[in-house]
Length: 461
Ligand code: TYD
Ligand code: MG
Image (cartoon, rainbow, N blue to C red; front, top):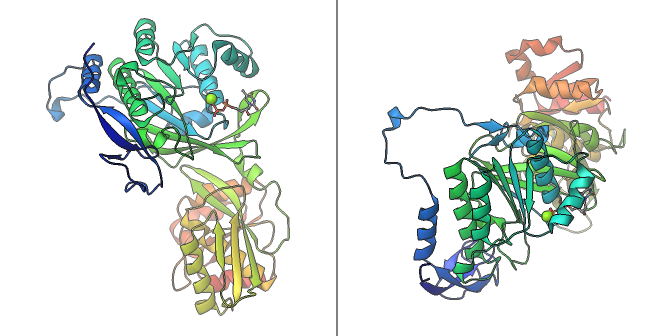
């Protein structure tokens, strides 16, 4: 074993920024009081990694490299495979991050079981729970035990590497990376240097052996242990598993993906039998919608390759003080201000002394510009006290001169609205010029070229 040459460093526990002295505020992520003294070891870590990385290939000419498509394994959980970009890439490293208790272990175990069912050998390293606890969880989510899934309770990195070398699995899950530690490193388990070091050693091992590696990481608020942010640049794919605290629905989102799009979204429901895929999320987002309420508009948005219908709610109230408030939840506040200005200046809707609130229902965050017209109509409908017809969906990007611009993927959006029983669809006129096949849809189309025409539709009911 090589002697460790270590020096004292201060490391930000939320983003991993290093400094030779203690700082009150991190210049990297602006977190306060996040610096903790750590022994950072320089040389030996590099040495261990070199020892592990089996690849000793010399540089080759790019033109001589035969390009194969990356190999993928399907877990069979459709939502999970899609968010990964079409399956699990062999040799790919995925970070699965989320709040404690959100269901990361459950999701990883379910995917591991499915892979095991397909005859792939999987090693599940459960550092946080005993093997018996993991078995109890597995009993809830799968009916029959499968042969190729190995479970071990271990947190020592050296032992874990031995297991991986011995078992030669196709996939490895490390639950969680924050409890794994390398004894030689000196710093305490869970510290930034430990987490970063262990993750990069495991990553190199996975790459050299073609193992699909999943690292589970907790998002921490107080910075007591290193957050997954410090790992984002090491891994190939970063998935966030999110959900409202009091709701059973969970959203899996890719925020970085070297093998696919980052716009994909998977929706799950936590049940007593584990996570169930939700194949029709629009129904949930619209489930509690009050029909005929003013200020409520249904908008088809695209998340990656998939259309969703979401409800946008506007509320307009006379301001009690001199200063008006504009607040938006799930929508960009600057974009809202712009749309309000368009309504005021171009359409003469007098909103200057009104407080305006906007909410996208279901905790969804809308970035799709096609939601502009829906947002403008939600505000106008609330102000004019005229409901938008409940069987109508609205889409269109709004420009500064109040023109309604065309949107992408219009057929998919219309199909989704049709599927959920909507009868009318307000669309940008310019889309009809480009895609005449839209007219063949049985849903009634209401083409508009500017915000005034859209307002006339709701004024006339
Ligand atoms: P878990 O996967 O342990 O979360 P994480 O690994 O992200 O910390 O999930 C914990 C929660 O999920 C816990 O509150 C219990 C609940 N749960 C179910 O409701 N049904 C189930 O079948 C399982 C396994 C867990
Ligand atoms: Mg867990």
